[in-house]
Image (cartoon, rainbow, N blue to C red; front, side, top):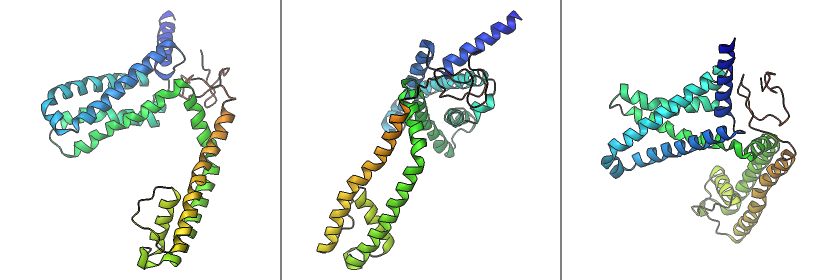
Amino acid sequence: MSTQKTKKNWRQKLHEVIYEADTPEGKLFDVVLLIAILLSITIVMLESVNSIRLQYSFELNIAEWIITILFSIEYILRIISIKKPSKYIFSFYGIIDFLSTIPKYLSVIFIGTNTLVALRALRLLRVFRILKLARFIGESQHLVKALKASRARISVFLFFVLILCIILGSVMYLVEGSENGFTSIPRSVYWAIVTLTTVGYGDIAPHTPFGQFIASVIMILGYAIIAIPTGIVSSEIAKQNDIDLNTQSCPHCATEGHDDDAIYCYHCGHKLNE
């Protein structure tokens, strides 16, 4: 009974350190992991420079193996510290962790294969883990929830912008014509999108006075349109500020984003602190 309790406490402690960031140990683990991720990405970037790769190939390979082993240990610890390992293994970050670690081991088996180059580039996906590690800052939880709450209004807004670009592109096709570069309605719609977003590549430009007037109106309209999604998301963030969330992770299903006073997981109903 004592052995089972010790094992249980060890597993719970490991889960708190790896999956949560409310404790000093959890924050330290996330900071160390963040540094390792940045180092890994730096090594991948340096390997893409021919002069550096030729001169320091041995050193880069050793550093790459050290970081790969560290991430492998972290991956295994994440699996054994959760009661349902499949929840992590098949989650978004679980798949990213696996795909970003396995290429180095495959390079030992498939030596000299050109296809491995593209596969090893998947290690750059570790940058997504940096976004996940920002959870202990707190505001990332509010941002994600605000984006989810705004998706319906933003979708309607984007659909309206698309319709507007089609209308404006069609008008410019009639006003300017093919002699001024507006050879088709799709090409004119492309110009309308570029102009409305204030990108302005300059590959197509209106030449008639009326076309230039319409372009000026679209440019001014573009500044207002860009501000609308920002306002939608900002209003949702303001609502989310009234909700206190922590980094408590369910030891059963690894679900995060619980209220500060939560006792049970809102996803599976499992008790958060046993």
